[in-house]
Image (tube, rainbow, N blue to C red):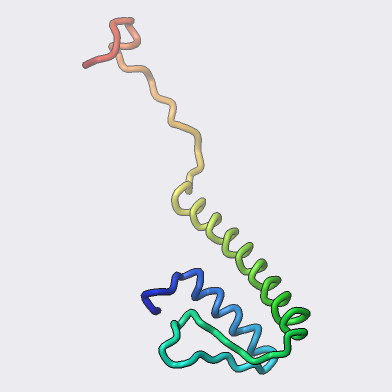
Length: 102
């Protein structure tokens, strides 16, 4: 992964690449352009009416799915018991009214 691209940018590029592949579009970049630069020659109308809306729809679905999976993994691993705070007996020093031990 290039140093100048974030994971989110990389995921967006991969999603865009999948949508472009559905329509036989071959993305390209010129030498010395960043790896996050993606270009394709398509008619403006196709971009506005088909490619971009489909990309946004797929991106929304994938982000929603990733959010749900992330929440499930966190809940399963960090909050596995998901229990309330443990209830303990008071220490003897508090029970007989002498105050907390120091």
